[in-house]
Image (cartoon, rainbow, N blue to C red):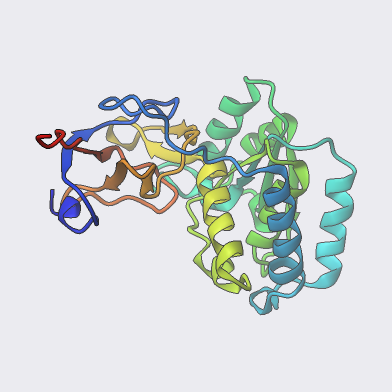
Length: 266
């Protein structure tokens, strides 16, 4: 409870707790702040990323303007996507399995939910090999929209463009933490909104028992930063040795409630 000692003013009563999927604290019953951006915040973030990351990012020297234009035309010809997948990233999540098998398993899982899925890949994924079976990649293409970029291209500008262009409902799947893109944003507000958007839209992928399959975890609906209402604090934390990506949800929280002072004698 060392955190309580650094919070100014008054006495505090602390309890370790969990947060329900709805965002309600299991200890005090308060609901945490929503992870969702307002329409104004979303448009601000979208315009900022389009300007400073996709159009103006030096890290995309490997992506030609012509290919980005080709991708923009492709996206505009499709219905809005529900899920955008970094295909190469997802395919490598289970090293002992074939890449095409891993990708097909995730795409099939999403297609069964009647979602509009976009798979972003590289052209070499279409060349038959021991790691990329042609029949499995054909099944991927039947169940999802697919865009295969040149092998030297970066995936992230395509992923960000397609996800943001589809609207605030669209989620994305990659294990990339996107620190470089956050660093490209011009100010603290844009960086905060990007991190919040990332937490609310990046689906975590967990390996199943003995690494035999992949399971998708929906992002939660509440913000996972320290929150206060004045007379209460909610502080996320990780136990020692727990490794968690920045977009993954902390499961441990400290709930602090201000102790009410008894009235003094008249």
